[in-house]
Length: 152
Image 1 (cartoon, rainbow, N blue to C red):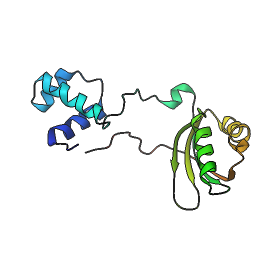
Image 2 (cartoon, rainbow, N blue to C red):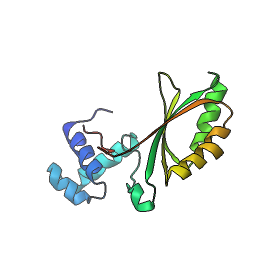
Image 3 (cartoon, one colour):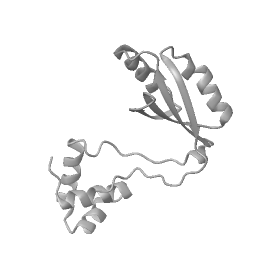
Image 4 (cartoon, rainbow, N blue to C red):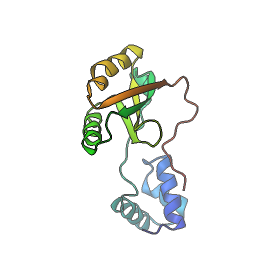
């Protein structure tokens, strides 16, 4: 799908605040409501806009520890990668999981309430996965920048 300048502006506006009324979006784009609504639907159908969510402050929910965890899988066999990925999808503590290149196979972002909660997660969930060879944890001290917006 080819995006024009108006589509790109619309995407940026929606990333800033997806709850903006279409009337307000139309005003920013110098369009009427109908074409803006159609553009939004077109972006949704093309999976450029995947979904709308509420961003929650983890600290407000007593989730004060963010950990990045690099994981190596024991044998580089497809069934082990598939098994690991299926198990990780079931773990609520893991909010992001990436396949990576380099010294490790996966990078996990884990949000937990405390160091004790993280230790419990590693000992009673993560380490029970037989395909794991190595785990390397790094703890976030301070958020310097956080955004989900991709400026276009």
